[in-house]
Length: 360
Ligand code: SAH
Image (tube, rainbow, N blue to C red):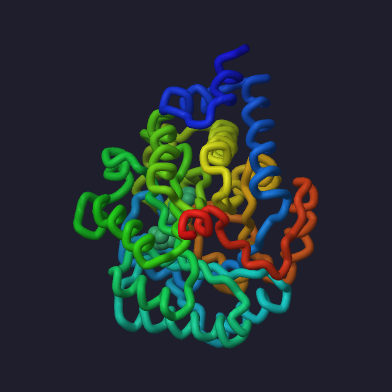
């Protein structure tokens, strides 16, 4: 029996075991994915739940070193999708039976922004008669704001920790009050306290990131008892601070391999959580999201942002689907999911099973 084989018979992984799995190659690597598929089949099945994604605004008050929409980037036009346009996207998601919506934004903290999100939550409720599930991904906010949005109908919140290693975190963010590691952690805690299905995630293949860091990221998610995860490869953006370290970034192949392994290992560690097949996966390799679904992911987020704004929501370079209107993507999404041996769970919200168990 190989070391990997032995590890995969265990119920809980320590850091060393996770590192061994992240380094697995050849038939050992295959074993990892076979095990992840088994676990997914048993706890999740082959349904994929969809979330229509609206990238509401690229306005942002922060300057994360990896992100293309940081405040200091002067090379993009700033937009905020108007309420009527948002309502059109909500209607699209509802008409197409996607089951859930995600609203994602840059990080803005103001009363007018909080109120704008409340208005959108109200519209979602009205248009879908309360049937659409809602995930927000609008960065760090006060607990009061999180509570207001929860009261207005949000079910889930995704706030990536980006890296759970404090030292690495500060290589990726300015060291100031706006980018405080402890504040981000506290925000994640507040989300849980407000009763959200709480999600986090990290970028994979960052400059300075080690395999140990990634192993610790997975243990962080487990210790935090997270309900859902969105994680994917880091992708360079030319107008960012981190771009100067592009030579330290692992090859595309390596980042894809590590991302798939992270998903597979997490699926085995946290059997009933929701895991997204991210757009960044697709950016690095054709068929990337399919590969993620085959490795343990069960959530897809088709982009429903009005086409005219997509180009301006470039978190990283070469983001796909920039010229596709929402209508174009539906068939291709379904085909992709079927190719991965999965089926679309139309009309279902796809709430985190883990959350249900944890809160019952
Ligand atoms: N501002 C919000 C969400 C918008 S950005 C928040 O902080 O919660 C959504 C995610 O995109 C980020 O959490 C980050 O993990 C990811 N992202 C940003 N820049 C990226 C890059 N260059 N490569 C890969 N992912 C990136």
